[in-house]
Image (cartoon, rainbow, N blue to C red; front, side, top):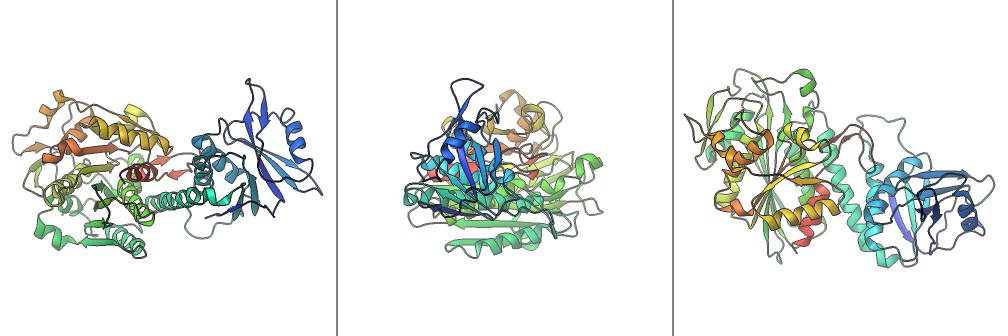
Length: 487
């Protein structure tokens, strides 16, 4: 990642970025006064350049002015819009891309810039510069360092540290999700979690293998993972600081590849199914981030991991599955596998862990994208305050979700003639029905449960602000913001 340094006396001015904001009308813009000392005449030159260079101040817009023999040698006019946290995040990402062929950039920040704005800028720089590639990358950016020129570096140290941890964990979730499934199977994922947690004091990890899953009755995980040569796992992480007053269980769907099983997907729908564990990646990364930031909230994280494959041992459409705790599901579509593994761990959390709040994230349905497009998660909960709090945190973090209804009229579709529940009825709205099915496993915690179907925003087809093409790490930033409010 980029090295980010706070300084009151910038000493590397070969490439200097100055913030520009929109003016009083749509066609004008103006440089923002900065607190750091600038080379003589640079501020006036920047002001004179704005109009002829057609700089609008839009967040993330960058205009480069070459100044042969001068200091700086390159002057970057950086659009910061309304200069709130979101705009600075977009500005940071735009700068990371525009300056990727430089080795170092100094950004002169406004005199009264807020810690939130600095946090946004740092997150944008670190997330916008993300790349995933196996092997050598001859086109990798050469930008390795950014200095932030401020009047009082100590005032922003905590904001930079928090932004760095948030970005590191989001990048980890992106790495886990982007990794091809030829490498990524349940055993590999569990090992990555164990290794990542080893350096964080107080964070415990337990990995259940197929034998333990069978002994304890995790029938959904075993059924979905039964068709693969790579056996399923259940990773349980526990962060339990002494001063914690609230216990949150985070659950993430971890299907490391999804063929659809016997209800096999067509090739176009299957080729990106390495991302079907993005929910597990998000909750794992958020928990690691909470431990790194020493947040005073207890977090137990459950990631059921399985590979949904086609073989003679794969579960069949029409099978009845007995979940943890005893409830049974008739499953007529083996491509609706995610809800089966989640059902096990939701029941386990309710019966054995008894948390104050129960949150699950899952790339659960294609209906998420049909309803809300490609950037917005579908949020479900019967708890108005919990839904409002998490939505607010997600929005502040720069992610998007929308609360959807848990329609009572659809519950009747979950009825089965041969089991307690039908896991994949064809009537009604797909994402809503999946949420209603999961709710059946929340027992006495129904009012403390929240589910997010984040299949659509877990992946991005093009670079856009702090998002880069591929896995987005959706959910890490929002969860960390929300968890920090529980202290």
